[in-house]
Length: 137
View 1 (cartoon, rainbow, N blue to C red):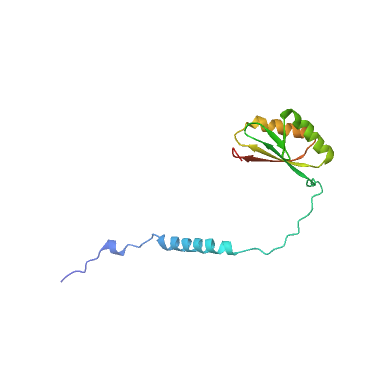
View 2: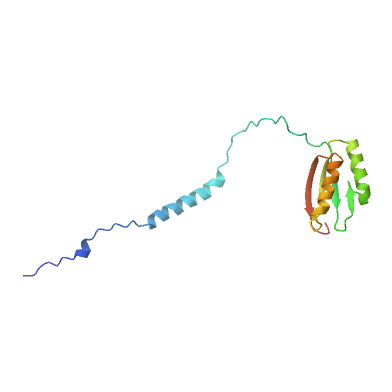
């Protein structure tokens, strides 16, 4: 008589969870959201409150350009460095809420920019913006 062979290791319970189907699901969901997200456009109209302490926008904007050689022009007119304070003072006297866009070469020192910003503050200019430019522009 032959005895049936029992393999104890063949009756072992598999207790491991296969991660592959779960990763497939995660990647499919990721793909769906990446494709769908740009298509969703909120159509909600926002009623934004007005700020009580907001400064008014400048009624006039003038460009102050500082070239790589240190030459300064205000509103397209070339100025000497020592005449800049007087020109800014006249500009403020004519239009107290004037805005100044400072276009400065990116290779000039930050100290030069700070000097110009201090000069504008001393003359009463409160609306300022800074834009750096490449040499030669």
